[in-house]
Structures are given as structure tokens and as C-alpha cells.
Length: 299
Image (cartoon, rainbow, N blue to C red; front, side, top):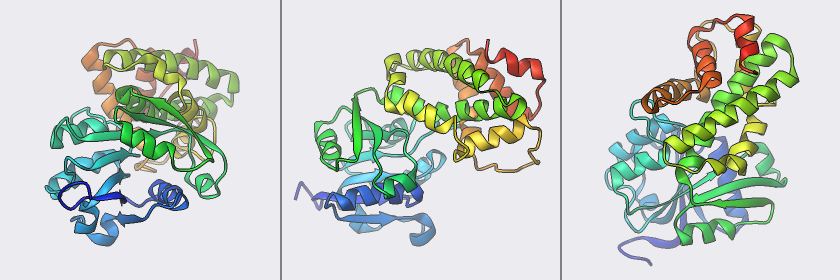
């Protein structure tokens, strides 16, 4: 017992979609007992049993984190340690997931982020993978590093950089899809990715992170996975735009769409020159482009 009613080494998972379930499987295979909460199953209020867990894994969509915290004011005590799987930028506030939590619960709460190129079904199969742990908390890093041998972990203390990489890679993936849909060119995709990485570094730097974070699994690793395979919803969505086959209101749950709206505001707020990403955002908003615009993304 840590303090109050917090049980040592217990794990609660908030949000039980594909990635939440896959990470739960990682925990179970490392001998951890888990309790899960999912709004579709349990309603808006988190059970007392999860409120008593030492570790909380947060795997809800970024745009819904504030609602979870608001609907459950007793959730997340100072003794609890938070591991964030969510990726994105809150459109209303431009906050990253860990910043939403700190704004609501205070800066003293212990937070870690797990982010990297991980398809949930492959994690379930225990296939080798690589991912990044971002935290300033020793207990969280030791807990995650102890889990299993089929995930190789990078370590970072740059929560801002890792959070931005995890969010913006979805916009980059849509951009790569647009290029492929328009030109079926792999050379152009790689040229765009390199330009987008240069712009991502500027964004991270402007927001107070470390631009070298782009070279971790959470950065270039996740970009490679998300921006080059048809299994990526964001990439597939971009192909439809580039091929001019996207129907109105189709696939509006794609993560990169809401992130692109927030990213546009973030770029404007910090007055960052990001020609490639800005062009992609404009195309996502309008579903219109000319072929020369696509070529210019790659120059």
C-alpha cells in the first residue's frame, strides 16, 4: 500500500480500444493484473477499483481526455502514476495529452508517455517492436523497462517532443498518401517526409521540446510506419484525397484531421515557417489542390 487506498503495482487502463487492449496484453504477459474502464461499457464514471491502482494507462482519444477528467474529479491522485498512450493535440487549447492532465491535476503528478511505431495486432502476436518511453519519473521508467523482451525501448525525458511527434506524424502520413494518390511516386514521398521532419524539428523547438527527439522511435520510427503503409488509416485517407476519390464526410474520424486543425493554429501561434505541412493542412481542409502544389511539397 502506497498511501490512502492506492495498491502497489496495480494497473488500471482507461480506454480499451485496439492499442489499449494490446498494451494490456503486454502488461498481462509481464505478470501484471489489470483492470480496464471503457466508456462504451461502463458509462462516464470510472470505477473505484481503478481509482485505487498505482499505475493508470490512459488510452482515450486526445479530444476526450478533458471530459474524462471533468466527469471524474476524484480520478488521478498524487500517488498515482500515469502512462499515456494517447496521441494528438487538443484542438481547443493546443495542449498535448500530458499537458491536459497537468493543467487539470497539477504539475506534481507523475507522467510517462509510450509512443512509437506499434500496430496493435503485431504487439498481440509478440513480434519484435521498438517504442519510446518519455518520462522524468524513475519509477515509471523502471516499471516500463521491466515489462518484456519483445519491445525494445528508447528513453527520453522530452515529453513535449515525443507528444508532438506522435501527433504530427498523422498529418505527415496524410500528406504522403496525397502524394501517392496524385503521382504514385515513392521518391516524392521520401522528399516530402524529409521536408516535413525539418519542419517538425522547428515546431518542437518552438514549443520547448528537443528537436533531436525526431530521431527516436516516437519520431522517425512512427513516421515511417504511419506514412508508408496502407494499414495506416491516415495514409489511406490521404491516398483518396490525392486520387480525388474521397467522398464528402468520408472517414471523418481519422486522427490526422483534427490534429491538422490544431497544428494550423500552433504554427500560426508560434509564427513558424512550415510550407510543406501548411500546404497539406490546406488540402485536408478544402479537399482541393493542383498538381504543382503537390510537387512543391517535395522541393
